[in-house]
Length: 124
Length: 124
DNA sequence: AATCTATTGCGACAGTGTTGCATTAATGAA
DNA sequence: TTCATTAATGCAACACTGTCGCAATAGATT
Image (cartoon, rainbow over all chains, first blue to last red; front, side, top):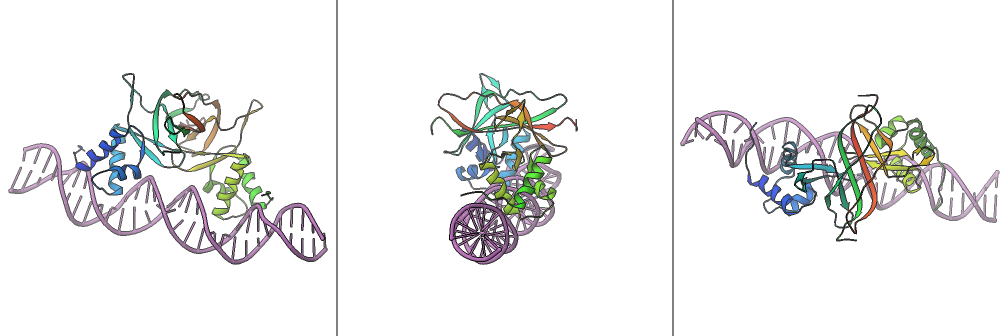
C-alpha cells in the first residue's frame, strides 16, 4: 500500500508544522485553508501516526491531540515525553522532559500517555 | 449544600471499594446490584471527586475512570501517581510510584494525568 | 491516455459526557 | 411523628468525537 500525496494531507501537515503544539482534529480543521471532511482528516492523522510523522496523545478532556514529532538537542523524542495542556489557550505542547517511571515486577509497558495540566508560559 | 446519604451512592462506593482498580462509569453500573441511571452515577462520581473520595483519570481510550484514593505505605497518594491500563483485562490500577516531572520556567501545573499502557502482572 | 487503487466525501452510527427539569426522598426542625 | 426544605434522582435530550462502509474521485505508474 503505497502512500500518495494530496493537497489535503499537505494542508494538515502545514497546520501541524506551523503551530508547534498538539492540536485536536477540530482545531486543525479550523486552521486549514482548504476545507476537508472530518473523516478524511481523521484518516490522514491516523495515517501520519502509523508512519510516525506525528504522534497522538489523549488529553484529560478525552480528546485526541496530534503533534509533529519533536526533536530536542538533535535527538528525536518519540512518545516518552511529558505533554502540557494549557487550560486557557487550549493547546498542548510537548515538553522536553522524559518520563521516568518504574513499574512493579512483570508489568509490560507498551505505551505512555502523560499529560500535565495547567497554565503555560504565555497564559500564566 | 449538605450531602445526603443514598442507596445509590453507597452502591457505587461499594463497587469501587471492592475492586481496587479504576473503573469506567459503564463498568461500575454493570457491577452494581441496585440499578441506577447513567446520569445519576455520572453525578455521584463527580461529587465523589469534589469531595476527594475518589479520583478521576482519563485513559488513552478517552474515557473517564474512577478509583478510590489509594494508600501506599500508610501515606495517602493523591493524584500524582502513575496509572496502569492493561490492554488485555481492560482495567486501570494505581501504581505506587510518584510522577516526577519538571516544567520550564513559569509554567503552572494544576493537575496530572499519567497513564502507562500495556500488560499487567496477571496478563503478561 | 489508460489502469490501478489509495484517498476522499458523505452518511450514518455508537458511546460518552453533560445538562435541564420535574419528581422523589433524605434530613433537620417543629 | 409530621412537615418543610432542598439534595438527589430519573428521564429525555443534545453535542461532540471517534469510527466505518461504500461509492466516487484522483494520484501514480505504465
